[in-house]
Image 1 (cartoon, one colour):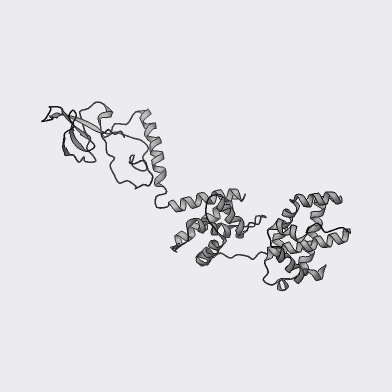
Image 2 (cartoon, rainbow, N blue to C red; image 1 turned 30 degrees about the vertical axis):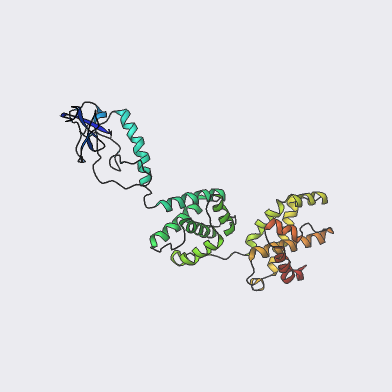
Length: 334
């Protein structure tokens, strides 16, 4: 639909200078001296200057109810579902004008889809970017979005938690429910959200779990040290220092990894869940790898490759934690 800021009314003349009276921005003013006569309220179905032959001299107002928008174009282009445009007289616009207004309407209507749901839209956009950063399958992303909408439909208020924190918690649940072969910790999720510009902490995700776990009704299985063992070994093998030490000793990298994995599994089978107690399974897995490397070093009659300090740096685990776990549970099996 076209729009013009002024329309001339030839039947009226200015009393001061004799100039023509026009309607500009809803007011009757003289086109020569600029004298303002009165404000004019135009009916939505009224087309100014009906006798005019040029579209540029018409002012149209779109009829019907319109969706309120935030960050829209400033006006509404026809009905929300329309794609064929006519002027105020019902005459279809020419093809080039049809394309012009169709592009404008596409941009305008895009914003209406997310009205009053801007926070959810931003949360889903961040979720998509985080899933790509963590290299997770789309099935996990879709399930996390499903859990997020389940909370929204349940009517439980978000209280002081942001939508981004809630979607981060839903992603954590989706990762725990799906067995993808790749372990993603809560720390990995928070770091990924920080990379896309959101302030998400482990404490905030735990708080979200306390608030919404009952409404989601998701059953999580506890992870064991056996689940973390491949991830710990990948970090060890990726170390340049470990590779240099193996090369110096004339040992094959893959052969060393296989021996380290089998020895670690053998140690874990000797220690049941009751003996492990409530220890952190990831830290205990790191300690088991340290003990397994000590066994391999004794069998090969060479110095140990993985020191407590090096292993702590590679796995982001405190050195004293490795030492405490080894002394309490693993020392007797060496």
